[in-house]
Image (cartoon, rainbow, N blue to C red; front, side, top):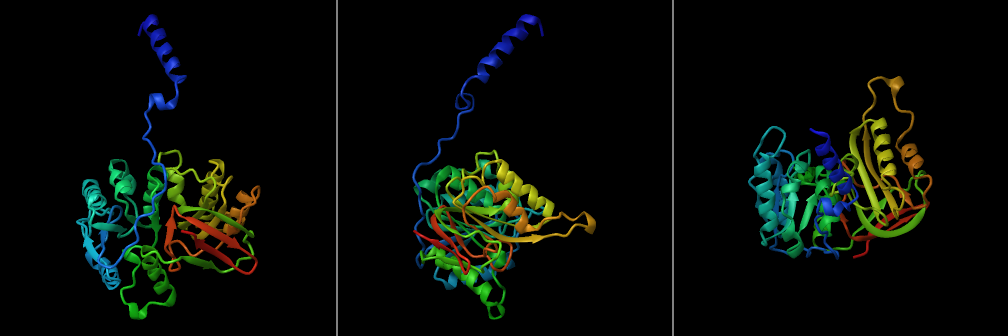
Length: 342
């Protein structure tokens, strides 16, 4: 490249660098105003699809039976029983199945069959435009956190963080009280019942009251979304997080990520759900802080209430939570309660 050409191109790059980002890379216009999908009534259709990991047909039968017993009709997607390695079919198949259920006005809620991994591979190809004009409940957790956060930030439609098909008990006669209550919370949430959640008082809790929109999900997934257009502006909101099979140093790193990206600074409240910890293979190299110390260190500069052992996560005690809706959090020395306001 000759000197004249180089100077001309350098000048163009310098000029471009001074332009607003929106001029260089047009941004998708975000939705304004919050939408709560209509609550379900008897006869409404719930679609079941697997936009992430593989699930066998037999493993959704209990969920289908339970949804039917609640009076809902069920439409099973083509991805159920379809497999490509760990995924519920090819990217194209999972995209087509999810898109069909989004666009189908008969379907009033979409229950993701399981988590695992896979949604991020198809997320940017999903056309969510119909979700604003014909909103419906998107249901699931774990990898489905991707959908909760993307929809919350870009489309302002409430979603339901809850157990999925692979969490429904095969034999209800052998289900314990917690299993039954968490599955029934899905019905309660979908039909518009008042939702109130209680957590066992914990000495590590920080007391206080807060009101704000509820959002959250799997901590590893939240960290992976940082800096993308699926990342949520969490200021003024109540955040819940949970994770599974992580070493303590990984949990510490992820909470540092929340702090360094500003997500912990202006919260109204923080809920710490289930965290299953994998021990280090070399005991003497185990990270020296437990989950309580890890969190307390990161939130020390702030004053909002913090509740540990909240009933959400990869565990039996995993209740359905309405993401995007206003909640009231109350943490006292003798009780911790979260209440849906509308």
